[in-house]
Amino acid sequence: MSLQLEWVAWMPSPPLVPESGAIDEVHLERMTLGDKSLEREVLTLFSAQTERLLGILANWPADAAALAHTLKGSARAIGAFAVADAAAELEDALRRGNAGPELLAALGTAVDHARITIDDRLER
Image: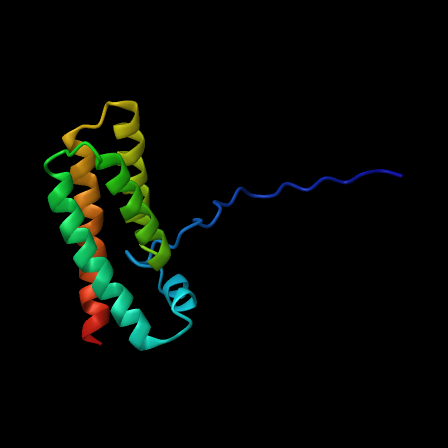
């Protein structure tokens, strides 16, 4: 018996997190059970929380790693995976004692994108 091999062209894998927007809408809808009222409430709370936490983090408090961890969990819950990743990076750096302003700025940028998406979604 002879084995015949074929050349298969390389294809990139799809991203684990959709790149289409700052919020994974399918994840958000699943987490809110398709309830639009609950979705609006969760998005409004997340937007307010991010504003408050970024303001606190700007002062580099002693509990900054815990605050970044909180933001990471909230972001994952609504499908704001870029925010979650940036918050995780900041949290890890803070726990290692080598966080710099560039990580906080990256988190701020991710939050800005998420909040724009949230504002657009809430206006619909």
